[in-house]
Image 1 (spheres, rainbow, N blue to C red):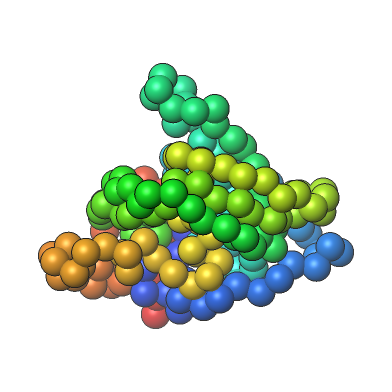
Image 2: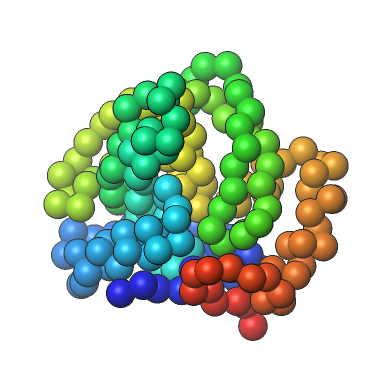
Length: 185
């Protein structure tokens, strides 16, 4: 089932998400709905707070980016539950990011290119893995969501000032998108 994506200004997007228990009722259905919602909105990642759930779950599918960019490393398609970034390293690099909860706004965000992350998959099997490049970037972006952070907080001050009116318009529902959204209030 395609779920509405909550818009900028919705309180759940600023809250640190809670751990998911192994026996969480309806977990597989929730994951299935999140995948369907993400693909319907043409996203490469989606976190549970973006559908109004204060849970430490996010999805990443960079395989579709790999198909568009021949130079990209091998993409991943993975659910991350109760993730914890253990290490971030390398030289910071800027890349233009966007977010399904903040439509039509993009901006350069600096992130470190290499991460090591511990997480559970959809079968609650624990993994500790390292990722780099765009895979690491998308993971970091979605991880920020479960930490209550949005990419706009990582933009340079001038850019933040320039998008302030657009953010206010999104809060008020004055934005057109071709996927279901839910606005604060």
